[in-house]
Image 1 (tube, rainbow, N blue to C red):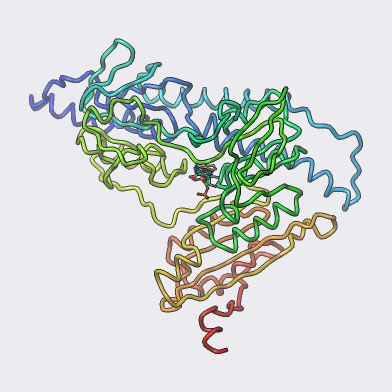
Image 2 (image 1 turned 60 degrees about the vertical axis):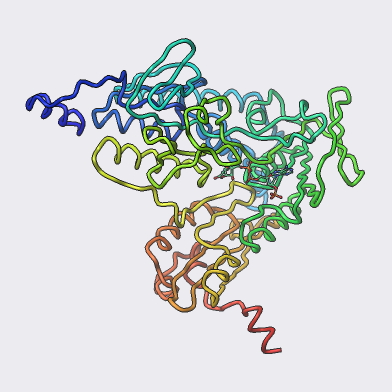
Length: 478
Ligand code: NDP
């Protein structure tokens, strides 16, 4: 029997059941990855749960992020695969891509996934409420003119793309939300930003054949990533024919007929059919009534929580991007899961935010886990660095000049591998496994003792033997 149902049964038998004054044990606002995991689990433990969603159940990842984005990445790759196939003797004539057909197929898949999310909630016994939920007080949520009360409230409303206020003509630009629903593919696109979303969408449009301009204020793409990752990706994007504009930003976007002129702050102008901003996302807390209810927010509007995902109001909790901890779907799911176990299954659990592997589905893709070289140097001082460049075997018979990079960072004192990074074919799939080794505290000696699988790119991670000369030690020796 589910935990809470059993507790209630015992209390009824013993005559100690306090009749709940609340409509629900839990009200969740937001049916994305974190909210749905928490709600269906809490319901399966016997809690009376309501889930409020103003759009469709599924959230950013399923409907406006990871899933449709990855489908587009796959879709855009087929063109290259056909070109590469020529090196293996294939010829494909009259190859065309039908953009509206892909959009329709993607929509069908999203409908299917939305249905799965609805079923998950309904099968667990949760009540679905459609509308915008706002917090009234520590135990009350409003949806339109209706009021619902709950012992606990979970905020899981995610984030939303943000565009800098200062951009003149910002009404002309799209974000990743609209980029996934364009009725036709732009022949020319300007993408502003160089984070996860910017480089992923630049790869997609470039591979589908759009003239793609990436415009960003830094000197290289992907600030915050390991420098070798940044250098390799910047080089590979250029090789793929993308136009990289570093150290500049648009001042003004001018609509000219059906197209746009993007006026840059260095005086240059880029003409495009779409302008997309991928300049970060902000937590969706505006107008939710949180501050009025006493829930503390940080200066970016993210909900401040403790390690139990509990806010400054003890009965209100928050998980996922709205808390701006690590903004990744599996992290939101872990936070939601731990919340439900702790609050509704008498099984206290905290989400572990250390050594979280992640991927960027750029072209070529990136997989990364643990510390960057700069972070490891800061934390451990003496480190050993192993780096290898490689040309994927798949491309040896082709004209494809794409190259990859693999890197291991080792704490010299303990021999523990504290960071692994890869750019190249299958990097996200490979790094998931390396993530287990790093989480388990594997040493470089244990990596070396592992037999490689030949021929793969992954085997490089267990065959790297040559340390890169330490820059400071090299300098001291000179
Ligand atoms: P990121 O934080 O990754 O990147 C934001 C980009 O916008 C950076 O290049 C940043 O520049 C730039 N930027 C920020 N503010 C301004 C400004 N005022 N003017 C000009 N440029 C600006 O955000 P994304 O929107 O790409 O992604 C949001 C989050 O979503 C990610 O951090 C990630 O957590 C998640 N995500 C994960 C994915 C995955 O797992 N594969 C895929 C997509 C998103 P600078 O570097 O100079 O600061």
